[in-house]
Image 1: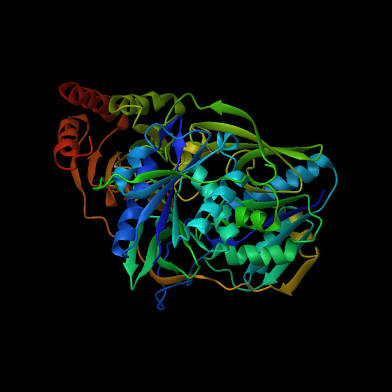
Image 2: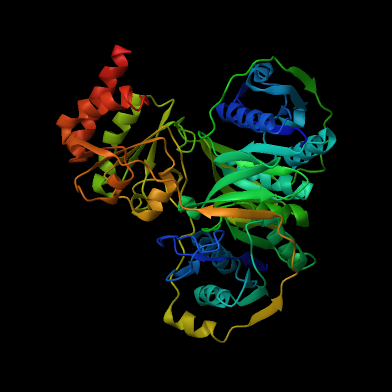
Length: 327
Length: 249
């Protein structure tokens, strides 16, 4: 099979962590097929740490640099990625299934006239062909799929593929950029969400359910999040909580919210409705605290405490702070 | 302005999913089917847009078989004006579906084409932007709220780290997520009226599916967990386990 291109996101002049994950997955998949992986970054300028992608398995780090690529523009980015895939004769192209990747990957696939496997959580090679493992029905089942397209396109779920350093340095190369007419979409405003980490990007999620009793008790969850560190931890919520208007939909975990795979998922006063479990069951470690010892959440939790979150949460924040202080 | 909402019939999100005997599909025995929840929000968005503009028609459109008639009727009962069933099988290959929609919608005069951000079965999150790309139309994904004014749509979308406001000219394709468009319940009057509204059926322009499901399997079982203890006194042990055993803190 031909080589694999990993589309790597950059933000604020740095390569995003998910970019190293996507590249590492591409390098591992390429190796099992006797091929090589390259990385592609788009922007006005290259990220300061772009060249270091060579240490994560990129044979060549390709840079598509243009003043018109400074901010994400769906039509422009899609055209440039599709052109690089075609010009490079790639057999596969991988994206991160981030907000940007979910927007971009389908457009690239349509331009290339190839199918797309979205939100992939595993990759195997069988008979020289890539097999993508992807959750369906929000994780209530997993499908093993193969693409018969000329290019195997996939977006990979963040936090699932571990970034892995490899031998080799890789070379850096600028690629020619031709922008399409337009773009037709224009970002006219951006409101930052107070600098908090998005639930889909966090490696630790502290989630609250109906048993939290009311939005006024969320400070208890915030204290745990802050004890872990707001640079890695984010708040999540169950559907009941979002439907009740206690928390914004952006925090909802589950089938009609976000499907997440953090290192640590803490389900606080969440009973564990099937559609919530579907959204978080691929987390590495799950902790549940609930008053009801028969709550379904204990069926998927690695560690549980039967008790009242009002008492457990403050102690948890305190113990984690003490742990961090000890180093 | 006319609006077409592309909807899909999917299992209810509260339904248990079992793999069928063929090993690649689901066992539909006892499964309740609904309109995919995000598609309901897209229908709601279309109805509100029609109401605020005071003109135009809302069409609900789906690719599916007999069972999808019920889904279209649900859209009509909410208030859509007409429905179209493209008779054919929807597969996991969103590009094949997008090709079918391109054949149907290309050359039509539509101001907005709306989708739910993703379908509750395949979770591929791709048919909307693929259809837009094939039709050469602008597309905004994951739209939580929007308004149409003077030949443009102003969309509020949730992205990592904040909310973005994006403007595109019409005609445009939008995929709708949870936000401003809490779907209305169909009234009894709406349900009665839906029976008399036009529902057109035609064979779908079939496109080859090139994404093949080799195996569908239940999720990997999580190893049995344990209850560390009761109440706040169990917390130190929990934190110790998270640090030393799970190595996640």
